[in-house]
Image: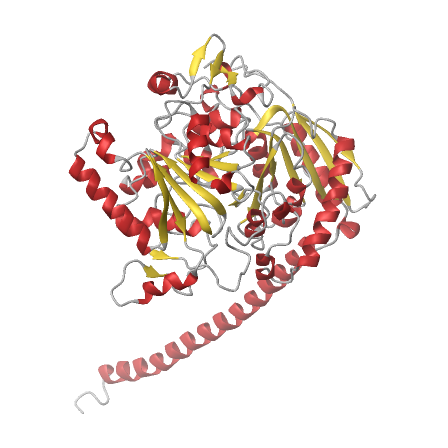
Length: 597
């Protein structure tokens, strides 16, 4: 009342008018922002639709994709054995618990190499199979450490310009053949085609896998990149299937119920530690009725414990713990003699009822755990129980080799839209294609081509139609594609999951032939073509070939990039003259680095 007619009163009255105006201004701004957001959203929506439309245009409408010519430089000579996703220079960035630093850790996009990996000085064309099983050129795998450390165990020896592989090993001092003979006596199925596929964990230089090839058993030899330098590279240089890998915190890149046999010869894997989680992974990838073979600690501990830097009591405890864990996972002791023990995975699913008991360990994996999910999938402390609906999954019910190669497996029914009829049509199609390929590439089917990769297989039919040739095929199924890898293994072939946006788990210069069927059409929306081709160059041997079957839309672009990698390519027609597809035959030429080490 005191200030009703003086200045303070008028100032207050003015302020009261300013507040509603301010509020109105804020409301208008907010409404304008809202309208702008709608407009921008619609604009972005239109742009996205336009991009999608452009990406989906058929080649006949837009014409082949074009890329600019490019020339890739040489990498530094110190990258001659570069393995991008298992690079020892990056190990310190990762944890040491359970050796996780040895798992796959791929470099970020900004750290990818855009250069060509040089061969070692003095590199020579690899010795041809079967002679290569016993010897290789020293300059192709110039690593002295493993020779000095393992020469007393007869893994290998260096003489002059060559390494020789006498077939020795920590647990087979009398040679790998005598060791495998003893194993055959314990497992008769190794002789009659019952056992066809195997995995060797901690493989050394893969002498066991090499010997089994002569017995009709196809083995994936597995070893990490560790201080036994280049174990996997030695294996592949010899012409024996192998991949870089380790059982640590993630599942191995294989489907469930895949291998007929698994083997560990003093592989130093702590099977009884961490709740037996590594044994659970072996259980997952082993077929019902399949065999797990262990030689070395703690087998035959009463006789061997003094040489293991331990006590007999400790080894006895480890053996009893191992037996208990295996029994809880439905393994039973099949046979044992000397340093070798064989367990068999149960084919009877009734055994797994014990997993449902209260407080039981290990437990049954729940329904949310996909048995075949194996690309960067963490290990879980539970038992993957085989699906009882598959009547021909166990080793005793599946056809013996080689009959199983041509039979449509039960598990093809697990793939949406696939059937036995589709399987048979695919096999007939690839019979015609492989016949045509051999007219285009004269080295296919000869001793000049040993290590082959089918980079994006379906059912393994490319490999199946090369089965009588002196080669083996690593069948790769994309981690983003329909899960057909179980079918590949049920046929008696081998393979792995992989994502081609990343580097493959192998050393440089390890494959003679890379086969591609529409990979760039399938993956161009995710993976940059340049990096896929550079990875192909890394793993392809000098004077090796890439056989690229691709849509006409991508063929010219692939050829342009390949020219920048110093490849010689020429275009051929398909077997049926389909104008929408072309076949590129590319030769990777041998060249030597001009840089000094």
